[in-house]
Length: 97
Length: 260
Image 1 (cartoon, chains in turn brown, green):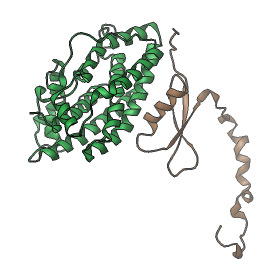
Image 2 (spheres, rainbow over the protein chains, first blue to last red):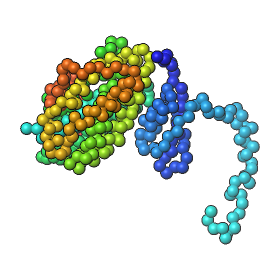
Image 3 (tube, helix red, strand yellow):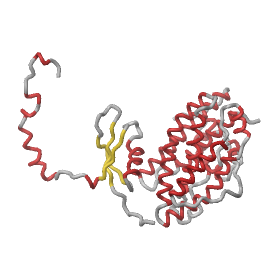
């Protein structure tokens, strides 16, 4: 017999909707292991027909960028509008893209 | 004189009474995720009960309605298994939190879901097309209930000393009530004769297989089946059903024909 953990680990839940191609993050929950996290995600996050597929990922396995470094990481992209495809003119022959 | 309609009432009352019992965990679950899971199970069961009561009401005709069947019948008219009306407090609930013992809840849901996973599958071939359709819908739901309760049965049985002791105690307490699954009743005989119901004996070996497999994995000992055989499905209930019905029916009886 094992000793009970005081606190279950946290899991991030990703759900793919019927029309969606990708799994989208929809929240998190506590569960003892991956199988239980899947069942609980089903009960907590797909009660209103939100999805047809679920992923769960241990929250501890996610490496996140540091909010304090937001400036140096993301602000330099703000004045590079030419990186957006809308910057280019599309020839009429191409038609709708 | 029992009829096939009494058999439908038996199925409906099973679903309603266990749905009501599971609903007692709403807001009191051991953790948020389980609170929601139990409420989901409860709503599945109440949904099944509604479909069955609607079917019974349409067969009875006159002014019969699903609400009248659910809220205006008394203890002796209910046809559910005694197992399903028992409170959540197990024999060890002296040290379980308040009167709700999760081991008792899980063991009961497991024993009943194991039966219904087999019974709904068999009822998909019922001569009554409406019942066959209800069976198909309910089968999907109960397969999840079985998966949920089996998973917890193994976790609790093969868990800590405390969880193992409580789950074994719940099993010892509840298992004898499953004898009622395998004794006949006039309603079941009438339904079987009409091609609407199933001969439960044909499901027993499979049920034993599901139960024994899970108990072995959960390191729990299967108690001997002996002693009093309950007869809730014939209308002879424990004292607990009266309290359950009083709580469930009081609002509808205080405001008959009320709409909300």
